[in-house]
Image (cartoon, rainbow, N blue to C red; front, side):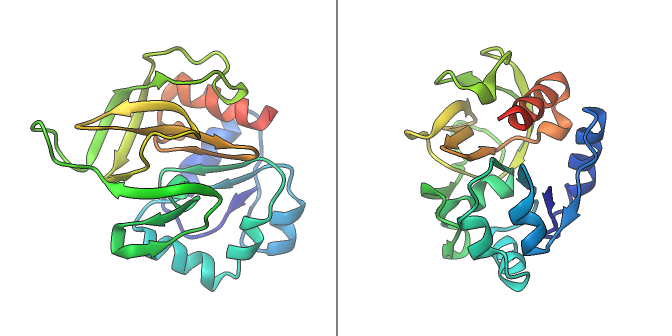
Length: 193
């Protein structure tokens, strides 16, 4: 089930799932989301906008107590964390830590846009058949630091979490729906959790 929180990447995530043979529903209905086998929270935009959309849809408490696999994508991953420094926004708190602005150091451009390598930090079913050094497609200015929940990291002026997991809650800072075979593998692995 795709959470209909207004993210502009909903269509491309839906098409990526269709390519895997999955006809994913799209809903902001709490009962439908609670009964789904898997929940994906896509997102593009600011943390404040994303949290406002979830609040207006009455989904904040629903998402916080889900026990099935949950995957946040891009902004959706950032919203899984406790807080974003972007407009000092309290987020869902499903993963400990704060999301921070990427520093414009070493001549790197912000936002981080384009293909970059993943560095695998820990083995996990979510990363099955994904190679260390594989390329994924990123578009973001904020990111979570590397921590205990980090499964894969990426470097862009600093090292940040590219894939995270805490129990049933997973996140990808990159766009799997735009990351070719690597992204398709991550989505397929998520659906097998």
